[in-house]
Image 1 (tube, rainbow, N blue to C red):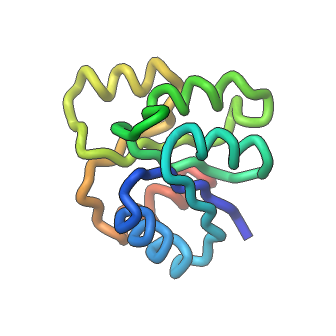
Image 2: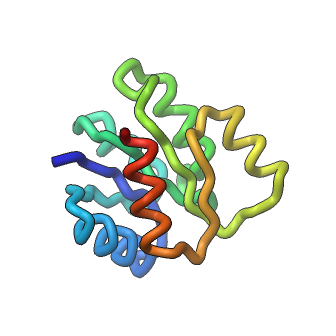
Length: 120
C-alpha cells in the first residue's frame, strides 16, 4: 500500500484529506506543521508528500526545500495544497522543488486523480 504524508495545521483539513485518500486505498500519515512533517518524513518511507503552505514553525515551501535536501526525498512527489493561488507563489513552489500545486477547497475526486497520476 502506498503511503502519503499529509501536512496541514488545520486538523479538519488533515481529516478531510486523510479520509479522502484512505477511501482511495492509500495509507496516510499526518503532521500538524512543516517541522513535524519533516520529522515524520525522516523516519518513514512515503510515496508522496501533500503539504499546506501557511503553517506555524515551518511553512510548506521550507518543508519542500528541506525534503529535497534529503537523499530519500530527491524524487518523491511533493504537492502543495493551499489557499494560495498567485502565480508568484506557484513559481516559488516550483523553484523549491514542488511537483505540483492544488488550491483549496479541493475536490476529493480531483485530489485522488492527481495523487494517482503523480505517484504513477
